[in-house]
Amino acid sequence: MTIERSMEVDLVASDWIREKARADDSYAQNLYAAMCNNEFESLSTGLAWSCSWRSAGGVVADVLDRGGDYLDWYCSGIWKDVGEPRVSESRYVEEGVVTDEVRADLEKLGWRVSQ
Image (cartoon, rainbow, N blue to C red; front, side, top):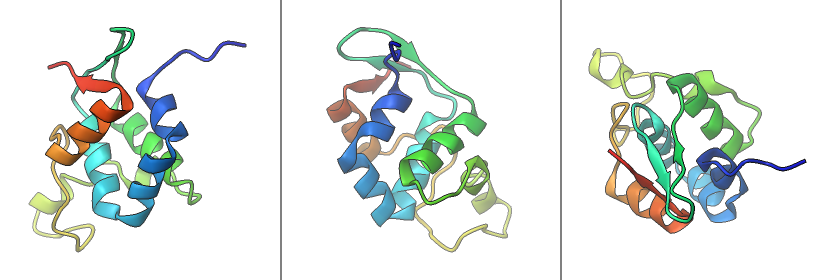
């Protein structure tokens, strides 16, 4: 069985990405937000990859491997704007935002935002 290369597979397989996300919920949320409303391109193959907000939450849950699911991250950036933050961490960003740190890490992993 051949596993198709995707950013999801690369993220879940990356020890250093998993360590960063497990050490900092803001980083995990920023990773989720980056996957929302964006398309990515593999630097090695040129293939495109994108996912839904729900899938992005699931990818982060898989990266963290804490027994959670997509709902732990789904719409986590929106909540900060309604006056009742779902979490107290102020470094969460809105869906679609790609922070400089996440952008650099994804490029190191072999992916870039194609928009």
